[in-house]
Image 1 (cartoon, rainbow, N blue to C red):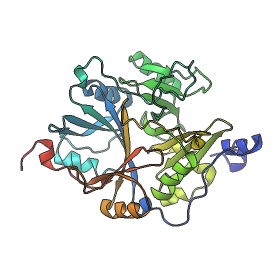
Image 2: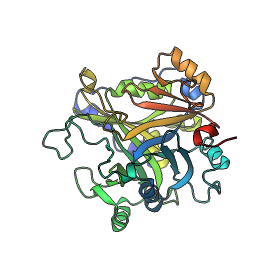
Image 3: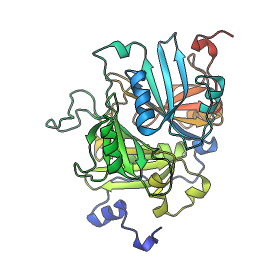
Image 4: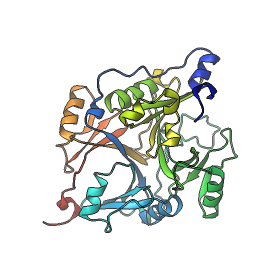
Length: 374
């Protein structure tokens, strides 16, 4: 590692040198966050898809993900597919779906991509999901301008040692690209497209850390008020703000991660490199300066038309107790643990209105909901 004195100035330091400070997140509160008290850990990112027979093999073939569990809900006419980018040699259940694969899903330490399929969409020629990257908040001359919603969800990402070589290999396999590594202003990163048009960022990582070609590394969401949203995920949910990339008079990217006690004690310059050094993904919050002052502005969460992204989720040790504390803290709920037919989970809303699922660690779905009898 380079000594601190030889590290390049951080984006925040460059912003300071450039002039007046842009809006930034306040220092963390000193009391233990509710999420950390209950061992909350980022566990999933949910995307709606058109056809699982296309999307599941896409992620398996191109990014080495593995289907670790599946739910089918015949009454509600939808299915859920859970994919994990596992470590090489990691033991997995033999049968999917099974009681063993369900137990693995709700006790695993990693983060999954949850693909939601509403039955019948695969046969609907007019069906398509919204990737989150088209919206009316773009200039009207932009090819991504769309009348209607403001942009919301942005992308997922995978880290790799060589973005250029990986991009070439993916393109040979028929993967489409929104941006190649040598295109645009940001060189060295790329954006591939999945079968539904969701963006997948390809990010260079520190070489030699992992033998696996990829690790699932980011979930990005645009937010209305960056500092306020950081405070929610850091001071309430217990994540750590590891990096703050400021582009003066434009936007800020905040990177938050679930860290161990030892990792939380690392120097700031080391924490800033963790999104490229650690296996688990970061939550990237993109904040376009000024939207926090616009009473009319609201990001589109993807849960009303046009639909696409659904939610992120955290797995927790004691769902009931955590939800009671969140309720007392004034966190708004979309669904409480004892509401609806799905027990063992809840949904709160973050400051931008995104749904944040909370799942009881070790939970199991009522077999009756899966069309099974005892």
